[in-house]
Image 1 (cartoon, rainbow, N blue to C red):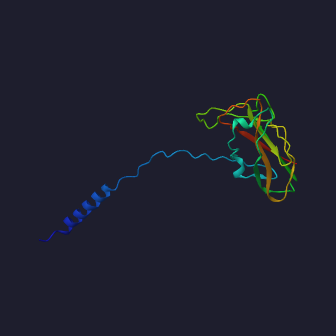
Image 2 (spheres, rainbow, N blue to C red):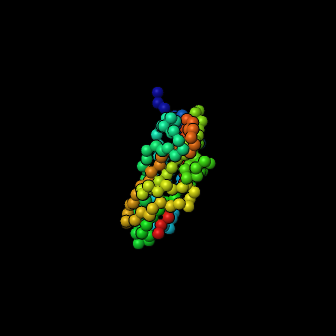
Image 3 (tube, rainbow, N blue to C red):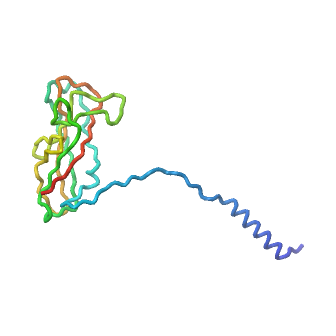
Length: 186
């Protein structure tokens, strides 16, 4: 049996249309939000993205380690990396920190339970920040570190943090704190 060419065309078109119908239209779904954060500065250096939002892990210590006000743990080093520095713009850089200070000792950051763990926040202890010379940087935004001599390109400011007891009795719990920092170029 011979099929007419117009019937063949009609059958082919029908098959093509039915196969197109099988292909589903794209489905769109909300996927989330991407936050872009940054800043353009007119300064001698830019702060590396590694340093702009970092976590310094101080570790875990027994509350019994703190027997008197002023007892301290060992220093935990951390750095602020500066990049693309131009020493003809400024020859020195220093840093200051701002955060919630401890009520009993305003030279240290107050601790809290930032992570929201079930243990609650420790008490009687704060976080002390110091520069590479050992000078304590009171976290009030007004005390800058010893100036670091800049060289062209990348530079690293060395800093330290540690726990310091602010009361005679230290209770266990999360001992977290946040601080922002400000760079000063001279």
